[in-house]
Length: 145
Picture 1: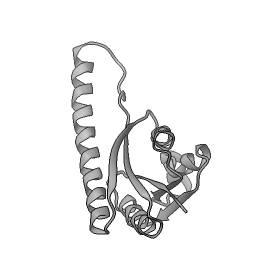
Picture 2: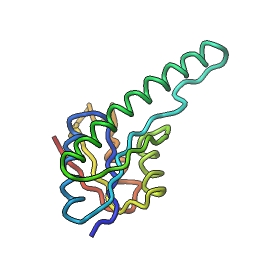
Picture 3: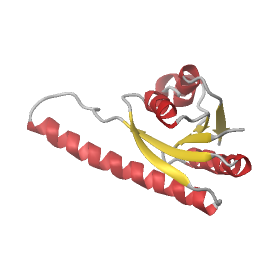
Picture 4: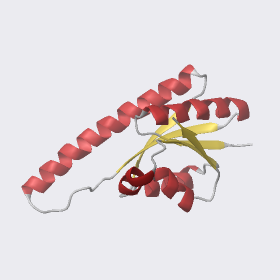
């Protein structure tokens, strides 16, 4: 039914629940799986040496965090008997990076976690899942914690 599942991860417990659900679906349908971590490649604005130094530090830390999250996702997939590809995507907004990954991988299902924020907290923090639902044209399975 689903040929390619995209699983955005961020290192949280909720995203790891989505990884587990995606692994079960991949085993059932024989799907390929891509685990995705999106970083903003240019979060700073400015000029000069201080900007360049801050940018380099940020990219190093963000890449390390991405690799750690992706390694955990790949291990969980492997433990479930599913081989997954890991990708570090880029986007000024996470949902943009997810949309680009859907297009580049040909994914036909997204399995992602939602922290279930409500009220003022949701208004202040926003919802990546809600934004993804608004921009993609493939099914999205939302896993709640």
